Length: 165
Ligand SMILES: [Zn+2]
Image 1 (cartoon, helix red, strand yellow):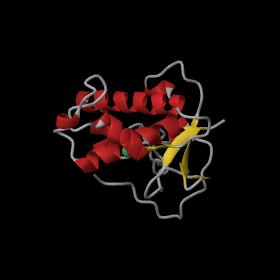
Image 2 (cartoon, protein in one colour):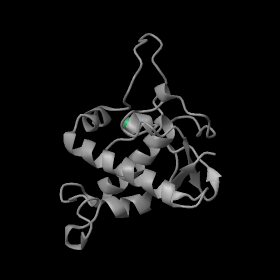
Image 3 (cartoon, helix red, strand yellow):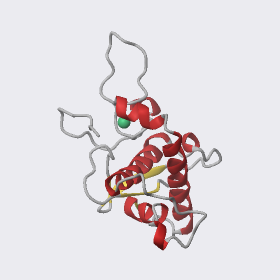
């Protein structure tokens, strides 16, 4: 997949605006073209096609629920890492003892599994739980890496999310 290129240095983490992030991967959208006032929803054609995939839709719903459950199960302030949710949701078939939660992973590569878990976390930070299918969850989450708030579009390595308040 192609990632949007950013010419400027990463901006500091700031309050999210739903219009400014890709609805599929949760990354910051490139600046609006001023001659075209139509708001963009996706950063790329890849993200647009991902958002139309019924197969991915099910996986993305499971990932959202996985983050929500781990956030609620943990103590206040605990960071839920993208890799934790990835391990829970994408269970190898042979080790799958939880048929309800684990997803058959044969068609997603390990790289895509990792990316999907991160995309889910980015969407939750940028767009919130209600937009991802958990309508009753009004709380917001923030992205944390090494104890600091980060902008997920630029975060490399291990990061996670926690309740904002
Ligand atoms: Zn995108």
